[in-house]
Length: 370
Image (cartoon, rainbow, N blue to C red):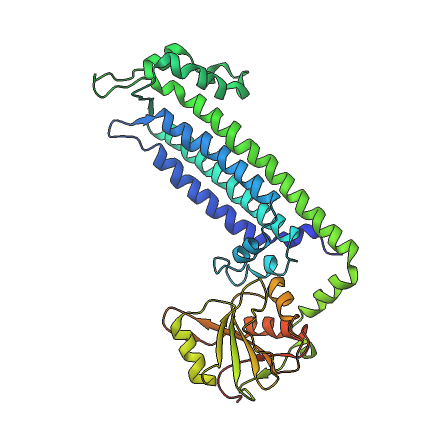
């Protein structure tokens, strides 16, 4: 049996990890760039390295616990995912399994971001003289100390990283009074401890939990529905032509165009030139077929989709509700900002396999069969 964690997507994970480290290095270097004298605002660093990571961590936990299947479908079908990376998340069943996959990948990116920012922090400490200062119109050293003590409570054992009133007074900077800090470089241990405690270590634990949850969900799915999983595995084989729906190049009669992809005007003009003007153009949404869809058998149904997006479970649920005998087609198209392109064979085969799982659905393509 295939290792369930393998379907997490090694290449996708590696890509997000590289992206996260790169963004973390850029953000860390930007936050520590300081002014022309190398002074860096301590309060701004706490915002970037402690407050925002905690906020994003809480937000990711909230989103992971909410059933936003429509939002999940939009994310995994986005063109952000390269063609060779997208099949893994898109072939997951809609619902909890897909949400857990996205949650795991978000933790990969977040952990890599934390590593990148710490790497930039340590590199700048080694290669430059970073001076940490703080400025405030309303607060003084005695006001700020209790808040910093609370922030530093996770590392009470690290005495050199604890804030003190003397250190706050030494590092306060006032542009009006011309007061400069003399020993503000001693804050580096406090900032490093904050990054470890509020960003890196929590993300490591959350990543392990996310990976365990996703692997458990895949194992449970394979255990409960082994026959269905085996069927899906067989359906992914492009070498079996019986699993591919036929491709039509003309329409037998007038047609209604159901737009699943919110196509631009130049794409709709291309469809009109290829198949004639539709008797109705209807926007199709995950809510199902609107009442405006004509169910007369004398009219064909054409559903327009983005060829580069692998089929989603939400679309299949909608198409199965249309059980009439009229001709029904899925039209995968690839388009850019001003032109319509020929879909790649890989993407077209994916839609053929999808249409083959539906009753009396075919694939429609412009042009004549050679």
